[in-house]
Amino acid sequence: METLVLVIHVLAALALVGLILLQHGKGADVGAAFGSGASGSLFGASGSANFLSRTTAVLAVIFFLTSLGLTFFSSRKTEHKGVMATQPAAPAQSLPAQIPATAPAGQAAPAAPAEPGSRAQDIPK
Image (cartoon, rainbow, N blue to C red; front, side, top):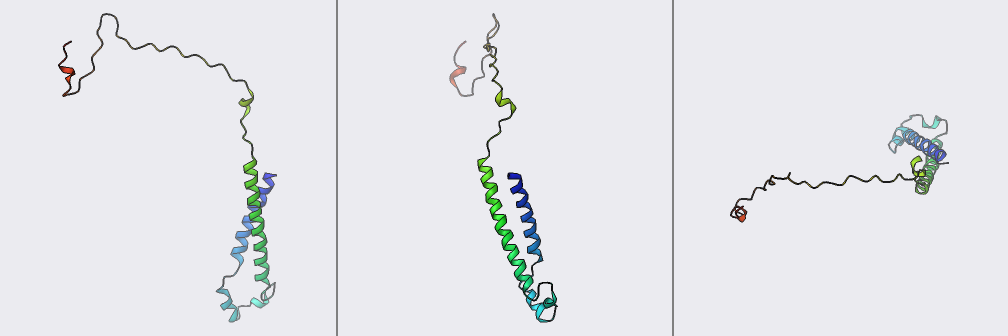
């Protein structure tokens, strides 16, 4: 059903663009006054403007309704978790215990360098 609404939505959008580009602007009326032949058109002198504007209005309503329909479908869509969601979880593998970093027997661990001006340099070892 969602695919059908999406196809209608795209077709309505394309038809809207085409019809809007076919319509004359307000400046086209001046050309008709000088005999551009608008009265000899297929729909009559003012019939094409009425037909195109009404068709555009109908397509705009269809476009808005399909937009609302697609919004409804996207809000109701369930999340698909995939094939692995049905499989039981594998037991967690235990990580090896971390061995603390100690110096080998008989060697002293290197001392951290003291910051200049600290009293750590004055402490005898």
